[in-house]
Length: 116
Image (cartoon, rainbow, N blue to C red; front, top):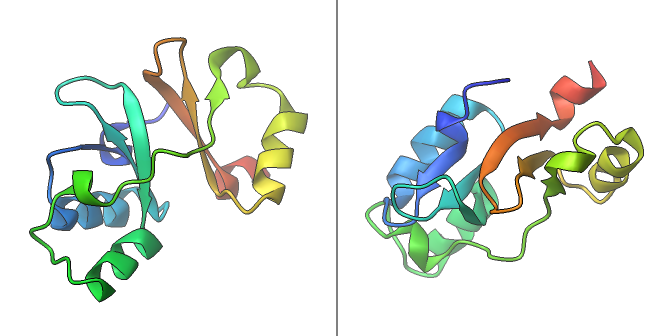
């Protein structure tokens, strides 16, 4: 299992913090968590951040202002289901969080690592 720290960002963090995590995890996305938990409540992509800058947000704006609550994930029971994983990748999703029944993150499947 990979270190998930750079894939997660607290909802109260700044967009600058999100960009740092995105740079460090090399996935172009971060998953937004509730304060001090690993419960996933949304996702932010590099594109979301760029669009927010065009709308007047800045590096000091909060993640909570722009994150997307409509995101795709796999249940822990489906983490080895190659058919489901491939069908998600075919939709253009390049990173998939694996969540337990409480929406806590367990792992992440990255497209690049999956095809290797």
